Image 1: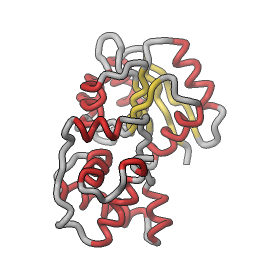
Image 2 (image 1 turned 90 degrees about the horizontal axis):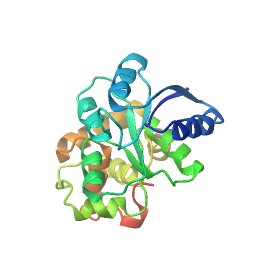
Image 3 (image 1 turned 90 degrees about the vertical axis):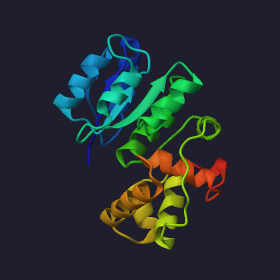
Length: 214
């Protein structure tokens, strides 16, 4: 399967650099570029990319505005926030709005590519310290008592940054079964996405912090 990526950043040199890096990768295609948030939203709706590489600081509509607009969008892409800024409140808000990964623009090529591939499978790659930051800012928590033993296994793997395909292989089940378990886990924990579920797993001690989220 080809992973189709949309790059949204107001700096042309950044877009060109990301395009060059991603186009060297097998199974990855750059579907388009946008230089501001409004055009990024239009491009998402027109191109239906699998992954959106999203800058936080852009004209017209900023990254958080894009995330808010996409929150209830049918078939929304997996979002990777890639920014030169590290503001605690913005990081927390981006993850609460459904961003799967948050990386600085200084991140190495391998980490960016890993984040794109993980996002296409619903997995997360976070910069060091972001998981701890989310914990400090009181991300939503929920009891694990309502989970079945199988759901706890899936949640543990999810919190370690595993994709659905990796969870399926490790636990000997089909991908659709994994998706069903993930949906059930989110509903039982009362959270909106995989990242928030992983935070709950951290808060409840299911997974050590240094082993979480890839």
